[in-house]
Image (cartoon, rainbow, N blue to C red; front, side):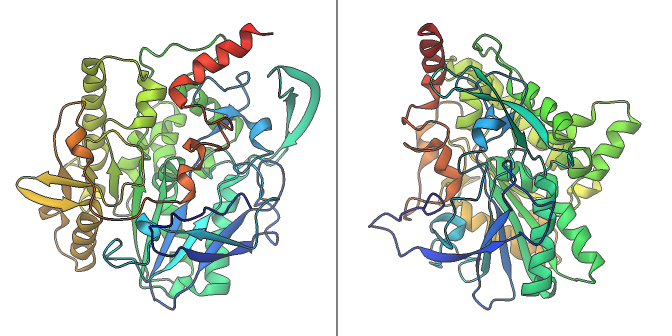
Amino acid sequence: MIAKIVALAAAAAADTYTKVSLAGYKDALCLDGSPGIYYLRKTGSPNWYIHYEGGGWCNVRAPFAQGQPSEPCVTRSTGHTGTTTQDGDTCEYQGDYFDSDQKINPTMHDWNRVVIRYCDGGSFSGMRMEPYSAPTFDPKTFLPDGGKKDLYFRGHFISRAVMADLAAHHQMNDATIVVISGGSAGGLSTYLHADDWVSQYRKLGSKTQFVAMPDGGFFYDATEELPQPPGAMSYDEIMRGNFEDFQAEGGVNADCVKAMGQWGRDKANCYFAQYTASFVTTPLFALQSPYDAWQIGNEVDAGASDLHIRAYGERVVDAIKTALFNPTNTRNAQNGGFINYCKYHCGMWNLKMNHNGEDIAMNQAFDKWLNVVLSGGDASTQRYWDNLAKYPCDECCQRSDAPTPTHLDYAPFLKGGPLFPDGAPRKHARQLFMGRLAKL
């Protein structure tokens, strides 16, 4: 079963989640047209943790993308991040924010948990109603083979269907606290859709306290000195193209889209956390590295000099502070964050740092911030932790005792993962791509 991640022997037993199909919601479709699903673990708690699964993006404008930041949607539609036809009735998760051990997950260890399966390729934002007819590729040569396949860009309807289903069948509209979260592309989904959860549940009369915890979802809008294979596209080009092709204008933060229109700016900006975060009214606690491992490999280049990466990290930090902690923006008043300069991407829930003489782990910082927000206190007094280190910073990557996380946001980067089935590290992807081109 592709959706099942096997726990490490040294870790505590993984929790079992049950599959819930969204087949009753006709527009909630994956890339291949299979129904969206989510996995559910109920504990009887009045509180809920909602996780948008991650796994990158796909595109329909570039050639086969083994050497660039996304893959063609047509090839993605046959794998874990494009279809649910291979999902089993149960799935196991453990570690990080999924863990049931109070020492590892002090706040949410006994909460109800939901994992929204990522199968739309566009961070749950697409609203394109007509199928997209995409050329198919020969898996050996990566060249078009003359075939066509209908694709469905309807991720926003999957997100909305989960909201509706949890309220209708699991009474989540009566919840006390709900944390909306996700890692990587799911972290971006958290920025994009947190306010939509609040809006939809307020329509149901819900008084639930919502907060958001995006993990590794602040993808900087930049094209650095990254060499691209012939005909390939940069990350920002892919995302802006997807905004149009997936018809995502109605599937992202509405206030951001409205403002960009009024200011005469590109509405596709709202597909990036650095622009949309300043419009989010749901309290946000950002988990982010300025030296994000994925971004260094895909926006800067893994072979860039330390000075180049440091300069990039400084720009990322400036963008984070502008978007999330601008004192002139009243929407930002309760935002918080754990900004650690370790080179990692997401999922380091037990990552530690020393902030102004205080030794604290990511999970502990979130717990402190959340308690202040829930008590109605001033989160600005206890909301932001960083360790202001220069790249590289190996000592920034210290972790408290906890099992290695085994949830699905890691799947695209593990040996045998869907993006690199031969286990090739991402930094070698371009050489792999060029080597295969040379054999044609």
